[in-house]
Image (tube, rainbow, N blue to C red; front, top):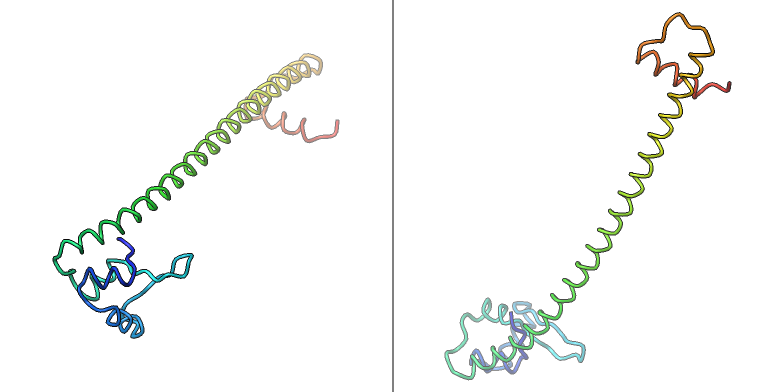
Length: 151
């Protein structure tokens, strides 16, 4: 909601500034300070503590003016958040693309090794007399033995 100065809040609700300060001191009403040290009260806090503001035209203008500044500030923050999110999304998309390329290269390298190992096994079977070629599961075991042994 809109941030109002203590004077603007007092005018909008038709109460004295002292009443607002009393509520602040009683810890019933919260206040924030800006970079310049000026105190501001959120209009939602005023609604919670004092109910609806008095129905004068000045009240509406005061709240609308404060809301305009607050909304512009919120809009700027949201635009920065969106820009940051878009940059992060692009960075993540780039990382995914890089990882996909790396996986494709590894798969290609793996299939090349499988082909080379199959050719090596075929050569071994042709040069070493074997009664029959082993079943695929046994062949895979032989392949694993061949890869792990220091022959």
